[in-house]
Amino acid sequence: MRITDITEQKKITGRLNLFIDGAYYCSIAARLIEERRVYIGMEVSSDELDRIIFESDRQKAFDYACAYVGKHPSTVKAVKEKLYGKGYGRAVVEYAVDKLKDYGFLDDAEFASDYFQAKKDSCGTRKIAAKLREKGVSEEDIAVIYEQVDQEEMLDAALRATKRHMGTKIPDEKYLARLHRFLASRGYDHDIISKCLSFAKGKYDEDID
Image 1: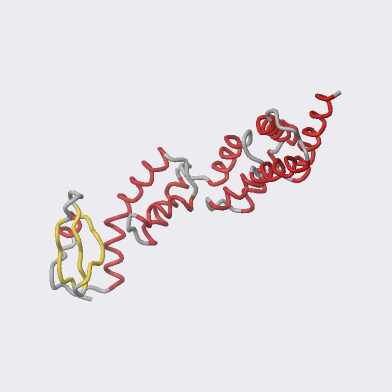
Image 2: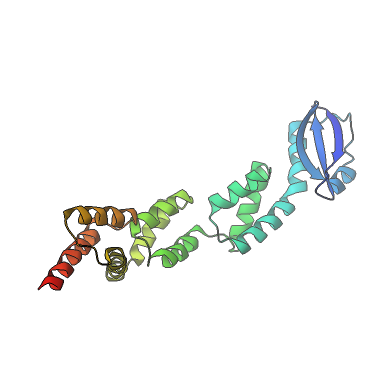
């Protein structure tokens, strides 16, 4: 592998573009180019180049990740995707994520618990669990969330949603089917949906007595 060009980055001060065998390879800190005496025409092995890139990017990636999780509570998956999207390699991404974990800035179990507390008044456990899976939370951490569920609180939230959805509608079979779909889309389980449908029918019966 031969370094065929080194150019300045227009948008980021202190970063240079590195070209290997005529093709863009990566960006790298300018100070490191000088410190490691990297020059055009230099022959370099892939292992040596990976070490240079790792040294160049690890602190920058960690600083970026710290700022990101400070503004956006995140999962390991989300942070990795963000860093990969910034062009960092696997070794740099794993370094940044591991360091965040060591400092307690990144914890999927804590994220899952906070997410559940924030969403439990508007969503059922099925929807919450599905969203957490999308965010990369493990089944083990999701199982812990289920232990936090207070079924009475979840039923109360579902009943409030049912009342808002009902309004003055007459709960005939067509409407009850629509209400069932609505509650299912919110992620409520079968038992809670059944109780809400019974409430809707009972509420109508009370009104016409």
